[in-house]
Length: 276
Ligand SMILES: NC(=O)c1ccc[n+]([C@@H]2O[C@H](COP(=O)([O-])OP(=O)(O)OC[C@H]3O[C@@H](n4cnc5c(N)ncnc54)[C@H](OP(=O)(O)O)[C@@H]3O)[C@@H](O)[C@H]2O)c1
Image (cartoon, rainbow, N blue to C red; front, side, top):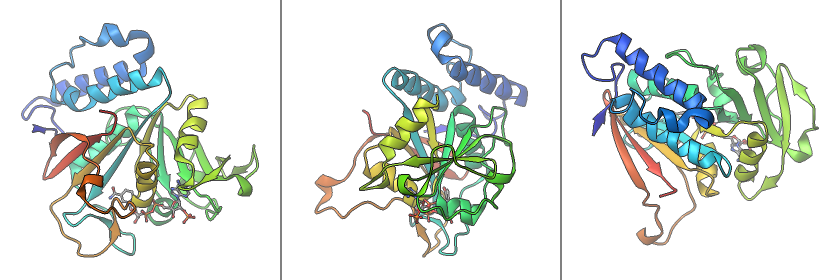
């Protein structure tokens, strides 16, 4: 299992890590024009490349036909992402938080559900590593958000609110955010349609950062390419669940995707690939 930490290789100077990260960012952001040329870039072989290089490749390939959607959740040993009251800071450790910011920097858009906006009031910007802020997207089907949260007030990145088509008008705004109507479906707002709407705006790499309900709806709809679950060595005993899918009759109906595994400090991240 590869160990990814604040240092790409334990003991490696920070400047080397910064250079490797910058090379990855360059490769990602220039992927259409120079993907092939950069395939042999100096980041090849580094631990940062081992984790993020295949994601850049997957996005590059997916972009030919559509979009790339990857989700991440940090959970306790007993599968909880937060207390019942909604406290989740912090389930996982510093290495996973850094990883989350790196995922934001690689993505075109970072998406969260209503409860995460209400309970965390997140900024959803890139602060723990170098890289551009993604467009911020929140799902609020019934229009419960009142515009007082930070994503509406701070202009660090464009913000989109996805609302049920019967509760939003094209061109509507809330604070600094644009409200976008999305059709309803069996999964609430249709995750596939969300991907299409964002792709039409050039947002082809979607990073779904939680919470459990939002990620579960994308997974249930078959609208996730990859899912990263970071398991932290703590037991909450109660709390908000991570993945929740409809009941299955036996284990033959379970999902058994190909996985990659990484050590992130004290935590272990398992990445599922649903396209394999
Ligand atoms: N540990 C982690 O990795 C992590 C990450 C993020 C958040 N969190 C924590 O997780 C908690 C929130 O997670 P959560 O699972 O309770 O809720 P959530 O996923 O943040 O939000 C769920 C709500 O968003 C709306 N929604 C999401 N997807 C939708 C879809 N496809 N269609 C329609 N509506 C959709 C629904 O709103 P309506 O109810 O209006 O229908 C739904 O109830 C917070 O405590 C936060 O701190 C933890």
